[in-house]
Image 1 (cartoon, rainbow, N blue to C red):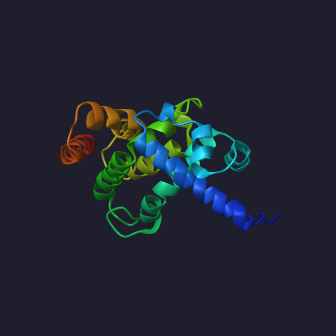
Image 2 (tube, rainbow, N blue to C red):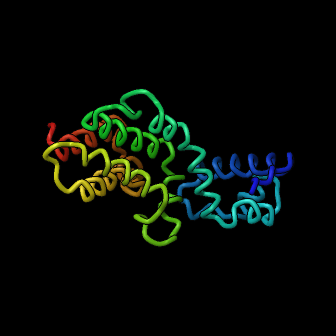
Length: 193
């Protein structure tokens, strides 16, 4: 079965919606403040267009998050070291976590919106499961490291959007200090500090 090609106006509307949503999430303090009506108005489309394209607010947030994360995921899946495959796990794990932290720092409100969608357990979300599987598989390759499943959850917890927002937003922690703290924590978990 072939996938239907979108009409030019649908492609244009989709791009306008994603740009409008991106701008709104960047400007608003709380992700809950951004409604589908706000996004439709900012994009110059009807709410029905939004729901046809994305089904619901969560679908739109997932799509926007995926589009923003795509360059990082390309580097992880096929890029050069230290993010890309072929990098030894003791180098790749800290690089992956640093990239994820930087992404969430750069996209704090959007990441929070995705993690707060209320669609069940955050540990069952597709984006979380991708990172968890990748980290767990890498940790399993490190001799002497036990509990790779738990360790991957613990390492990912250090990059949760609500924690990033708390540290960077509420406490005003500088980006470089957060990166250094995460690197130190990761080194302790990996036994390389």
